[in-house]
Image (cartoon, rainbow over all chains, first blue to last red; front, side, top):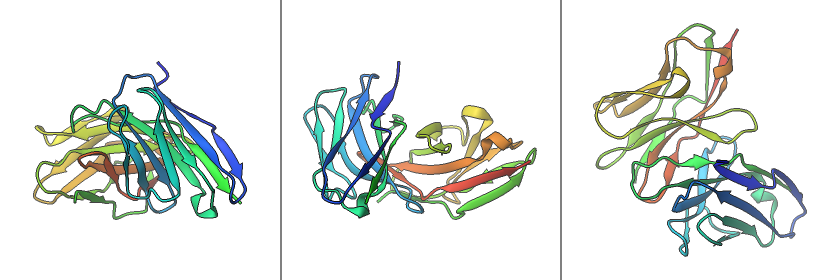
Length: 114
Length: 111
């Protein structure tokens, strides 16, 4: 049981390049999330998917798109990367059937945009 | 909207001493509160949560947290700090579809 996995671990992009961050979970969770972590700002929600086939914007969605490919996988795409998107990105999942559920996090993707 | 605040960016404590990492919350209705820890270059690991019931919640690695409704606080505690407890700690509160995180407190345990 690997939990939540993310690829790649680290990526360097040039301004304007695109890339997709991959996330998968093997816990049969319904809800999945993408956060970004910046110094002094905690974690901020980019997008989430409450269930397979649905996605919703979070606090900071501009410049990102997501795809809930199936119940296991939730990808985050940067169409045209900007230096302001330099951050550490975390994927998370939870059962989603109750507000009491715990969210479990992946190891993160460190992204540097030059 | 539900929110939490962590008033201290940095907490230093000597090894063997008790530690406290502070968190205050602002919610309407019943609060569901969480603590996570992040070790260097790692993801967030769940420590404990308060849903209802006993105000003292016990979690992983010997940590516990005290829910105080009158002071709207949910402080993380440990009776005796270890050097290996040095990490970044986040308090969070449940919103309808996600978690809202505090800005984090860096705990350094000094040998």
